[in-house]
Amino acid sequence: MAVVGWPDNTFMRQTQQCVLCGNERCANELTIGLRDAQGQQSFACDDHFRSPRQYILGWADFTINQQTVSEQLAQISLSRKTTDE
Amino acid sequence: MSKYYTELRIPRKDKSLSWDIAHHLYVQQFSGPAIVVTDKPAALVPSVSKQWRKIIGQAQLECSRTLDPARTSELTNERIHAEQLRFTARIPSAADADVFFVTIDQLLQASITYHTLYIVGELEGNSLDRLANNIQEQGIVVIYHPV
Image (cartoon, rainbow over all chains, first blue to last red; front, side, top):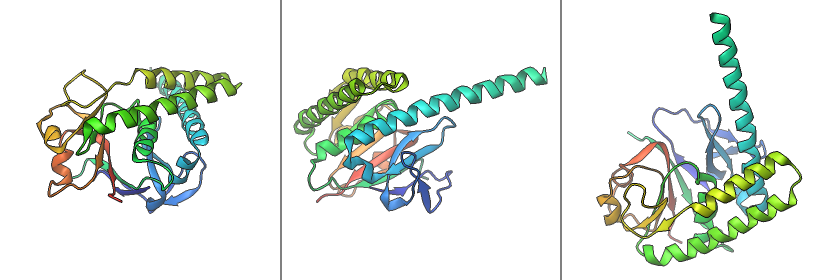
């Protein structure tokens, strides 16, 4: 319900976007989520705990989206490699 | 030097500590081993396990409700993984279980690395950095405020 600390080598903005609903939230309204496709830590509104249904579906959708992003990043990396060669 | 994220939590008034731990853990279940530090490990295992089974049931229900094949696949994947997660109240050792419930002293004896550390109750002079010594880079420490 409040993110109060983060790794020294990590920059934390005063507000973070909830990856489940897109709203900007202060650190004291956030819970720590999953890492995204680029390895960045994600956050979500702590309020989403109130609805286990939305919570489960929200994180499932986040994972699906990140898998798509990950595949796209891999394709871009591959096409760059091919172009370089 | 901190290498982990820290989150403070207070369980909602209408929900138990076990409910909150289980729901937080559900999202982190793929991240790696988790440790729950508590004065009464043996007492907390059954209550978190019970809440864990309820979340699995909820995931199964959502899976049966959805017509989206990607969602069905992801929810099935999560449910299967969640069903296989092993909870134990023993000193953590590699490949022994996935979620360990231990006292502070037991945690200090352990040598495995873990991704998520839940701390229930007072730290009583033990510094957080000492307790989280074996946490993975970019790991998560969740501290439950005594109510």
